[in-house]
Image: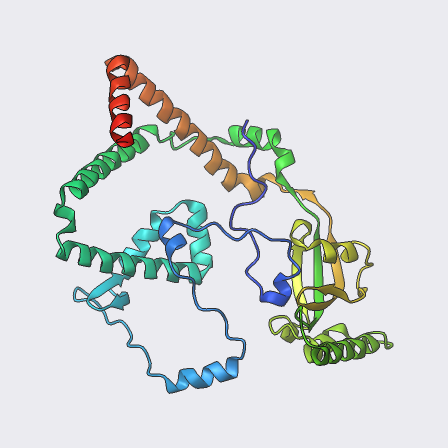
Length: 351
């Protein structure tokens, strides 16, 4: 039995600003939902100084809002005379896998990237057709091959699709029991932090100021009845977590940087670490709570198991169908002629 992934690809936490992300040990980002998304330009980063950017944005002319299409279909994006409608976006998302659909619907930035990629593709297609690019002999041959491949692929998908009732409850439970070791959720820590920024290579004045700030914060934390959240809100340089009293939330153990984890593991509940120096500054960590590792229950893993089992069955059906077609047709390959073809190609390439 194939070992299943311990988590779905897109179950990672949302991206943090740099001071928070510095705590993570290279946590995997969600997989891109398609080649288009992978190639789309990334959305602009969050501004470091929101007030300044807001002021500049106010002075800039507002972008025109897309208008409804002629047939009443709402246009969600437009560049020049090229539109992307709401129904086209829905069709794009429905064509993705279940996991990718869940990811793209949960992360608006990914959907925005997809729309930009669709607009870019349409602009390029328009330009290529105007130049009659598709009428070049080499391109025509590629288009024919792509068409044939698409026909074969979609046909194979149709004949390989598992029965709607597969897998049944017994089959899902059997797969779960056989792979329980892969469904262990790691230990998690609920943590908060106070961050004092100091970049590597900072000058002596900046370092002295940061050290003084750090010393003042430590003195306040050690006072009787000190409130970590209040101190974090007033003093932390992490603009994302400071308004939440430094709260980062629950973080799986494998995602915590080793320097931080070494301190967190030794903390008692509601205790605070010594300052931890990383490449971006000092992090003072508070451990709010801990969750022990546990085996994810079948109810939590059922959807992923069903998808995996159906994918495996479809792949087996596909291979069996292709083998049957070959057996019925009994194709013959002239290996001698084939070797000559490769030999001629090699000689031509060498010349």
